[in-house]
Image (cartoon, rainbow, N blue to C red; front, side, top):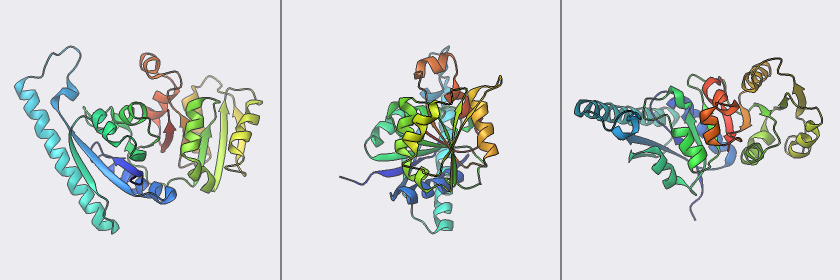
Length: 268
């Protein structure tokens, strides 16, 4: 069986360099090869609910934009490989990211991608495709992030299956981190005993604390705690209420994804 690899999914050139840099770091930590993919999506990816189809002009304009973006991604990867002295392979697909992620199911150990809301229209479902369609653990990278990765980690504690899966997926990073802070927002201090039982064997020197929200949303508290800790990664479970409910009433996961200023290490 082929060795599972780290997949860097580049929706566009926005945030691509940051994703490639972190993808290599992830590959080194996991001891796995790194591959890159880009999908040139079709016009159907941007049809609004109120539209039955795009006009001929809209479809042609979209196709031209996608072709230009594909060539820009190809050139960026080539230049990055040359500068880094690397030879990471790039696969180009045509279609949609949901089907492409099914292609990688069972082959990719983890997916690195840029914050979805920063990507062009038609490419904003990359995270849902990787995280929810194929259940890959993901690292979400905000464009412009240049402050390293995995040295200081914060874990947003919640005794729920998605976080336990995230901890399992990112155990090598938690074990190697110089500092790990485990933060439970708005919870009874007693929950930290379970957190210690789970994380103690992985990160023996981790620090544990509860934080009162004081009128703030959980996502904002976690991001503030991460900034205070000078963290370069936030480990969280995603969409524990389910995707549909989160879409109807955005919760912590949606806010973190949209507002994060540091890499998110997530599993659903």
